[in-house]
Amino acid sequence: MPLTSIITVNYNQPAVTIDFLKSVKRFTNSDEVEVILVDNAPVENRMTDFAAAYPGLIYIHSSKNLGYAGGNNLGIKNAKGYYLLLLNNDTEITAGFVEALVKEMEQHPSIGLLSPLIKFHENKKLIQYAGFTAMNYITARNGAIGDKEIDTGQYSNDSRETGFCHGAAVMCRRTDLDQAGMMDERYFLYYEELDWCEKFKRIGKKIWFTGKAVIYHKESISVGKASPIKAFFMTRNRMLYIRKNTNLTNTALFSAYYIFIATPKQLLIHLRNGRTDLAAQTFKGIWWNLTHSANSSSLGYFIP
Picture 1 (cartoon, helix red, strand yellow):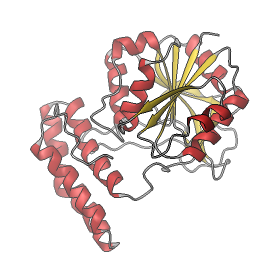
Picture 2 (cartoon, helix red, strand yellow):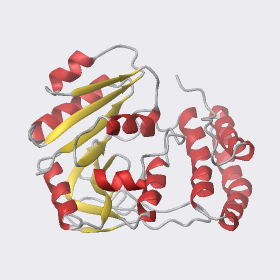
Picture 3 (tube, one colour):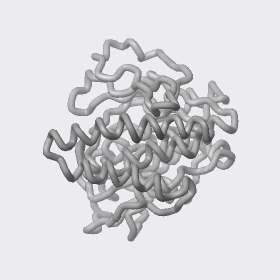
């Protein structure tokens, strides 16, 4: 089997990352994978603990928090594998996981990005992702196939083209990546994998899902399920994604919908819940797009 580089990014979550590394050690062959950990601006150096969880670990310390996209890009730059497998540090893999993904890629050369069946770690019978529907570019909305369904094996032999990959677990070939390009680091958090999918589509590659590989996900551990940084980047990047990937007419239609319908609704929900902090960051995310070009390198948010 060709060498697979498994890349993960840690941001001050050593216990979660150690669990991830232990699962990789348990369910992979060290001759067929290399594991790269990018440690984003750690408050304490836990390299020794990480290496104990996975002997042979390639540890990369970043003094700056590069975010999801930047951290993965740094790992990719140091990877030697033909296949690149980006996995969230809050996931745990299962038996035969890497082999199943590689086999799917080998059987279907048209695949550009491939994501597995993702289930919730807290309830391993509950599905989070079995593919995404196509995007409505006017509203920037799409749906997660299988979301909250009980797993009865309905997707276990399902392999098909899908709307988008899932950022928690995605594989590609080095040769395709060299042509499509790496993740856009300006997103920092959220929507970067959707933008990445658009890059692969533009070079004629397909976005694919397979239920033959399963991973468990401890969702939203990095920034929390309702945090100011999440509110900002979810708002900012949704609009940035449309501005980058659609024409002027579509961008204008989306902007009218987003600014005058979707955002006021979200602001009212935050205010009703007493979350003025989330409301402020939602407004800030819109304001960033109104005051910056789609090519701006400004993050618009203080990142420690």
